[in-house]
Amino acid sequence: MTVRRAVQSTIGPGGRMMPTSAMIDLPPMTPPLKRSVTIEGHRTSVSLEDAFWRALLYEAEQRGMTRATLIGRIDRNRPPDIGLATALRLFVLSEMDKRGG
Image 1: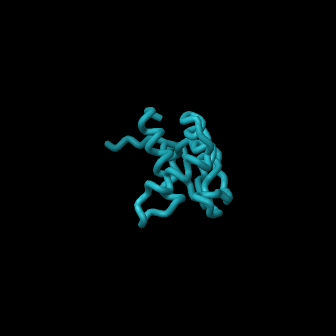
Image 2: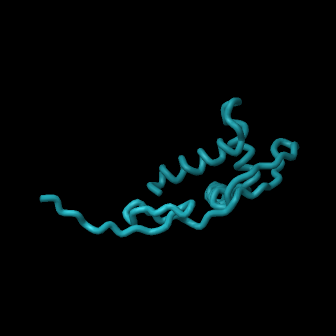
């Protein structure tokens, strides 16, 4: 004899029905924000989500420097085949991981 349980579901992305157990809590999401930064005297623009911009500001303040200075240091130390936005995101994730966050 097979026993079936009712599965609660909700409407997910694209209007598809998804089991409630498949849902996860997501933070507020924003599209990337493009900001201009000066690195070693050169202006460039970087697109990052607001959460990454805020995290970079926090990390800079923890080190007693400006966000632009921190970005410049990350830029100087990144491998040449890694884009600046990628390096910034990976830096933030690495710092969060160190803090257990």
